[in-house]
Amino acid sequence: MVKVYGNKATRFGFGEALVELGKKDEKIFVLGADTVSSVAINGFQKSFPERFANVGIAESNMLGMASGLALAGFVPFVATYGVFASGRPWEQIRTTICYSNLNVKIGGSHSGLMVGPDGATHQALEEIAIMRCLPKMTLLSPCDAIETKKATMAAAYFNGPVYIRYGRENIPVITEETAPFEIGKAQIMKEGQDVCIMATGTMVYESLMSAEILEKEGINAKVINIHTIKPIDEKAIIDAAKECGAIVTAEEHQIFGGFGSAVAEVVVKNMPVPMEFIGMKDSFGESGKPSELMAKFGLKDVNIVNAVKKVLSRKS
Amino acid sequence: MELGDLKIMSASVRKDILKMLELAGSGHPGGSLSSVELVVDLYFNHMRFDPKNTKDKNRDYFILSKGHVCPVLYSVLAQLECINGDELCTLRQAGSRLQGHPAADKGLPGVEVSTGSLGYGLSIGVGVAKAMKTLKQKNRVYVLMGDGEQQEGTIWEAAMAASHFKLDNLCAIVDCNGLQIDGNVSDVLNIEPIADKYKAFGWNVISLDGHDLAQIDKAYSDAKLKKDKPTVLIAKTVKGKGVSFMENIADWHGKAPSKEQMLQAISEIDASIK
Ligand SMILES: Cc1ncc(C[n+]2csc(CCOP(=O)(O)OP(=O)(O)O)c2C)c(N)n1
Ligand SMILES: [Mg+2]
Image (cartoon, rainbow over all chains, first blue to last red):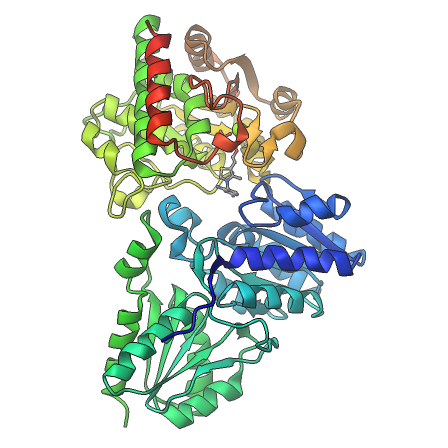
């Protein structure tokens, strides 16, 4: 059985980390954009109003302001829905923040299809692609609330731009408080030799579930949680490719340019093995219930199981 | 339509909005209810819009920049029999043409363009208006925005362009209900003096009560007569208008009423037109 320690939205891990950071460090400054409670930065706002600013519905300005705060020595965190945190101010992030290597941390909430009934406009499914291509950017995509808290803490003490991708819906907590978290270091969730499922964010849980189904069919899958998409843990990927000889990647994000692409870049260069990709197949999301949408767009454990069978048929 | 009929139509649209949102279990009542009269009078008395031929090349364009209030648009489209009233029940469900924010890819007649990311509608409107000028066509363009939405920088890029290009075929409407998600617009990030800002940007500005159908009707008429300048209606409204427990409450920005709340709201609206 997959060990589940509770059910909690990753946004709360982000918000709790900010409050802790605020207590420890006077340099932490938080900016919001009229979505303060929904991205869970209201705790920080309440505790440290003098180091908080709501800039209104003005995300480009928010990233520009964060740049200025970083120039003046603060460690600014901005947060809003992922589409508006990564997409609209993309060029501010590229040219002002990354090109100047400014110490700005970007919280991209409401990632993925699980945003549900608000539909495609609010379902962030492209941030991995458009953030990981940026020089100097570090991209974190934690798998549950506990890991999101650790990722946020780690981001604060890392020098340079960091994007943290998290979500709104309650999802299973599958990591423990004591589990180590290091930027750039993948975490093996389950050992196995037949195939390796590499997953990020919400799909780590689905991958563990799929490994359980596969187990019953006599297929022993290794599952790796890749919470840092950039810089990606090349060694863990190459080792797994050698050990398992076949890889399935899983992400709640577009396949093109996404997490699976990042893994493939490493695999193809170092240890080519057959791969399959689970993710959004070049389409927008739509309105609906989160679980319904995950099934409709093929992002459930059963879809991973099918991808594993497909990839195993090509394994030499 | 006569003012009395517009008032009854507005009540019907309000009831549709509440029923749709209750069924959907999520969505945005506050800003939908505040926009009702502005949208109803526009569609029933001013826009050249053929419900049976929504792609007619002589149509006026309506761009719902604040896409989250799409229930008001969907209801008006149903009232015009542009879509079937039954379809309103599918709001926000998987596979529906009535997405949580207007989706151009779902083929719903009357939805010109996908919106829901705030701050984009005015630029789109400027583009359509410029196209019509270039084509020497008479189509007019209407863009409905929120007051919180005025905080987006793109609005002001578009505002500058609209007057520069003398787009008198463009009419923007700002639904000034005073609230956004995080509270009062004046507390979150003040936009006032909003009328003076548009004036300074070269617009013809009409300030009005956004629930007074006579004032609205006159404003749309006056806008059509104005030469060489785009017009903006600065419409003072009440967020959640018509439902006592929703009026002026920020919390009703983005949550659906329960069944009981919906029924109470409907009875209040019915009473208001007796
Ligand atoms: C670019 C962008 N940022 C944030 C949001 C989230 N959001 C949806 S509605 C809203 C508040 C809108 O307030 P206002 O424009 O005043 O609309 P109204 O009061 O009429 O509902 C926000 C911030 C969004 N849809 N788009
Ligand atoms: Mg408003």
